[in-house]
Amino acid sequence: MFGFLGPNGAGKTTTVKILLGLVHATSGRAAIFGQPVDRAESRRAVGYLPENFRFHEWLTGRELLDFHGRLAGMGAEERGKRIPEVLARVGLAGRGDDRVGGYSKGMTQRIGLAQAILHRPRLVLLDEPTSALDPIGRREVRDFIRGLRAEGVAVFLNSHLLSEVEMVCDRVAIVDRGQVVAAGPLAELVGGTAELRLELDRVDDAVRALLGRFGRVFGVDGRQVRVVLADGRRPAEVVAALVAAGVGVDAAVPVQRTLEDVFVGLVEGRDG
Amino acid sequence: MNALLIARFTLKEAVSRRLVLAAVGLSLAFLVLYGLGFWFAYGSAANQAANPTNRSAPIFASTLLTILGLYAVNFLASLLALFLSVGAISAELDTGTLLAVMARPLGRAEFVLGRWLAYVLMVAIYVTAMVGAVLLMARVMADYTPGDPVLAIGLMVLGAVLLTTLALLGSAALPTIANGVVGFSLFGLAWLAGIIEWIGGAAGIPTMVNLGIAVSLLVPSDGLWRGASYYLMTPIMFALLPAGRQFVPFASGDPPAASFVVWAAGYVVVCLVGAVMVFRRRDL
Image 1 (tube, chains in turn blue, orange):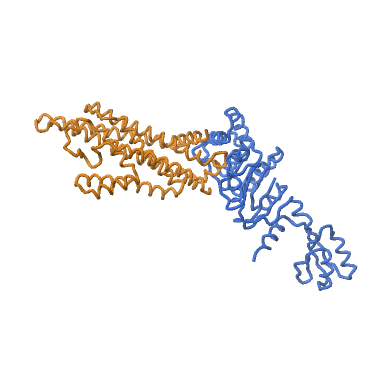
Image 2 (cartoon, helix red, strand yellow):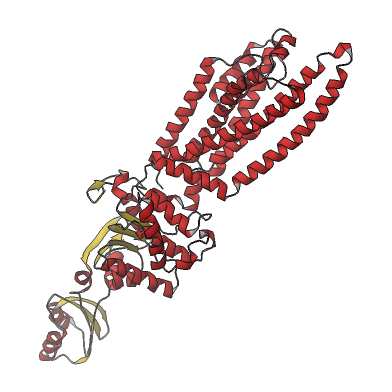
């Protein structure tokens, strides 16, 4: 489960399209499963759900899957078995013979997911799979993605929705204006950066110096101050040190930073 | 294999979107109308043959009616050829249906070739069926026997294939509407050049003839029709025509030069290869 996170226009969709050979890279090289992406064969074990995609509206759901199954190189017998299976899996079992043009947004998204996993790919690239959906649809898609993980399918999820990435991904890369600004396991990106919000009877240079021993001090506002704790530092140590130095502590609130804090900090930090 | 898959899909698309139904319906209407027109017009000319000064009236009438009908068929086939492929790639790009398809292990060349095969098959069937129907009616009603109908159909099919391939190339490079405008303009230009060449020939103005030839090399569609029209006329008709053999502005009294037909076939190949190359470079 790899989350590719970035603001709109950061280059997420372009990256996925380069991986699929849909867009030519202006520089550099890309490969999937060791095969360069300009070879059609590199896409054999890959499923893809484009952002804001549409399918040929005159096809029925079943015909659409049959066409994509043939393109993916599936035999007739395999298609006959697998198509009802994936239709049922995405909850379209009774609607396979309806035209795709008559599908609702949620159903369109589901048939899109069905075609992406039809040929049992080893890697599935999903580009903003929930952006057009209501909250219930979003949860269904999240459950679907988790189901893929259980089957051992690698998922590359493009999203600007932090909560979504946080909920399903193990590894995350944050991209901004075409550059990866942070990458790693989700726990590493988010963890180790606990923050302590303090309200003291005074915040002077001496207090700042004291707090500086525990981490990065910022957000001084009257008697309030925030500290991003360095690795291994615990809030209790900070409070003990403050009390020992004779500083009155009115409030000390530890805050677990979310991916959003990391993301906004990184992206905004690059501005200007 | 993949190209055949795309060809099959394109044919199915034409059926599902009622394109085939519309084409068949309109063609039948055309044939009925044409048959009635032929019946009455030829009947009136046949009556005049009783008059000794008008012995050849039925021959002129049947030739004129047949050539006119086939000229209309050629025009319809040209429009069909242009409309079929005008959005072959660009419309798929606009609606966003191309992304999921091209993300499959399918080469760009296979997609273009598959589309092309389906269009070629459709225009070939259309031209053969329509020319066959018109010639059959002329045969039954006026005992009209063209010089070489097979060769004529071949040249007309080549003309339609040429236009559909030209529009396919355009659809790889241009938005659908722009491609339609360009394709139709080129078709119209070729038609105009054919008329200019005919007038130039009739009036003995070499500049006009050369101009017409130059344009027909640029877009050989009208030239191919003129070539076909030669084989659609009867040997008796040529015997009756004066020297120079100019009959009507939209038909030719001379067979097409072999080099011109080779040029047109090469033109198709270049357009097809060009469509593949342009589509390969395109970011989707």
